[in-house]
Amino acid sequence: MLIVRALVMGGMALGLTPRELGLEAGVPDEVLAPEVLSDPDARVAASWVLRLWDYLPRRAGDESFGLWLAERLSGAPLTVAWWVILASRTLGDGLARAQRYQRLLHDAAQSEVIETPGGVIYRHQVGAPPFRASRHAIEFGFASLVQLARRATGQDLVPELTRLKHPAPSDLARHRRFFGPAIDFDADHDEIGFSREQLDRPLVTADDALREVVEAHARALIARLPSDERTSARAASVVCELLRDGAPRAESVARRLGIPQRTLQRRLQAEGTSFAALVDGVRRELSERYLADPRVSTQEVAFLVGFSDVSAFHRAFVRWTGVTPARFRARG
Image 1: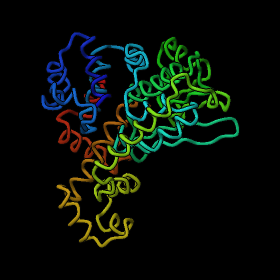
Image 2: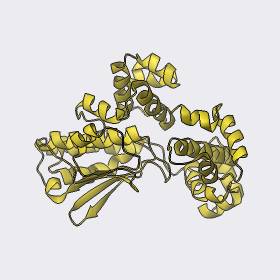
Image 3: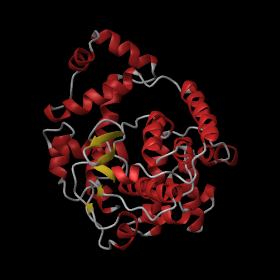
């Protein structure tokens, strides 16, 4: 919810009240209601957050909106996990501890901290590939992490490396301020790296007593969350893997999950969906993500989401969104 509040603050800076932002972005009133926004532990469906990340950069007309938003918030802690970092003794210790609580940020977070000979790389992935958050959300998260590290160490820390999967913007001035010269675009992963020397720096914000309180609160929040082992989520990951060979059959997905087909259908029904609706949803989500990348042609998108015929993909996309793939892409 704290990320949503940050986005609402961005909307207000653009002259939008929360209600106006919701109307223009297609987010229900109850998601941005005052009582929800005031609850730091509230949970919001990822689909609504993604709509805000899609709409606000277009409204701002800023290709580096995520960095603009991070600058306005000036490194304020956005999650319980970030308070864990601030209260830890070193930056490395804080990152390692915060990794335990990443689900508080996003149910589908699959980020990891990778040890290297010279330090660590923090690789960010939301959901199973090729799912990915918007470029603005990724840049906002990395920039906010850098600001937090600078605040915690009391030094103008610059990451050893930053790699981003999306293309470079036309103006790199903001990126250089946050990430320094060692930044690459069109990379294989979204990741940011820190040296061993940076990780070992003592934090001026270290507080053992506060860290114990914050971690106890984080563990309590994790315990209250519903199980993330839903059959629909596991099945969606398998569907992603199988789509390039065409629309997967329920029998094939059930076999990959190690359960009978009838069990798969029964569990999906209990979770409020069906196999056909699941495949349709995955195809739509992937289609929108691929179309957002100008390097991927419409024909390639059709193939990647399991259509052998472009006209069939065209009809399906109009059914999903009400607009053609070309119109969706032109709209940004």
